[in-house]
Amino acid sequence: MTLDTPQRSAHLLSFALEHPWAITAGMLATIADLLARHLTGAPSDPAAIAAALVARSNRVPAPQGTPRGGGTIAVIPMFGVVAPRINLLSEASGGTTFETLTRQLRAAVADPRVTQIVFDVDSPGGSTAGATEFAREVRDAAATKPVLAHAQHLMASAAYWAMSGATEIIASPSALVGSIGVFTIHEDLSRALEQLGVKRTIIAAGKYKAEGVAGSALSPEARTHVQQVVDSAYGRFVTDVARGRRVPVATVRSGFGEGRTLDAEAAQRAGLISRIATLEEILGALDGTAAAASMAAHRQALARAQVAFHRHTLEATARRSH
Image 1 (cartoon, helix red, strand yellow):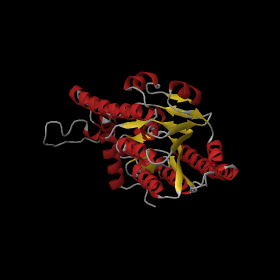
Image 2 (cartoon, rainbow, N blue to C red):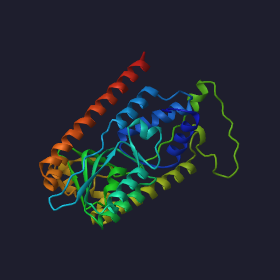
Image 3 (cartoon, rainbow, N blue to C red):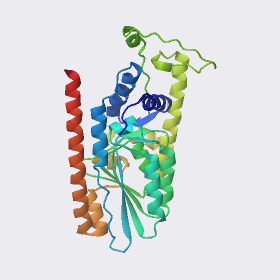
């Protein structure tokens, strides 16, 4: 298992700085910490990342059932940070990739035995890169077969964006949904590097090639450009949601939480979701009690993996504090 090499850290840095994020504010701290560690030369925490990888590997395949009308239910999990390609950020949350989700969705659409597709979502969102493309995949799939997107316990930002074109969006009673917004981060670490005795000289060609590079300060002109990139991604986000939920773009901009996550009842009132139900209830209605019992066992296995992940993360944090 390869956790952190200079090449992978460089890829992480480039990816995080070059693409805006559609993710919950809570994950901002994780992203900023990983970036700061890389830029100041501190290593990533291999114990926490290893625990996340174990948690992801322990996630058992979601069960499939047989709807009462015949055929098969395909249950596709979307957990953790979602990005175009797996990297340390998605590994640190036990996440997945848009490529993996696309392959699973296309396989379910192409399989004549599958008559229902259910996404089991527990994600804070992820990168804007790949989100609009996958949202289109979901819309296209929903035009062929019913696609249900279920939030348990979080369907936020890029995860909601991706699921916006589903036939129905359903949330568990305790779920949080929304966080429709985009941000990027810039770490001005010039003083931190100075305190470490590091002085970087940047040599570049192209008027804007080196703006904000290696943790340097952003000029007002550079900040304006970055804001334009963020605004463009946000425009794609709200347009896809409006199309999927069949409401005006203005409604999404002003009435869908304005960047906040909403509880299930508020999300239903605002129009972000179609109804409130547990995943077991959904599968039970489609497939009877057998699928519901199978999903309950599936969720228990996930819970055990997540507990192990958080325990290892806390232990790693405690070791760093001493």
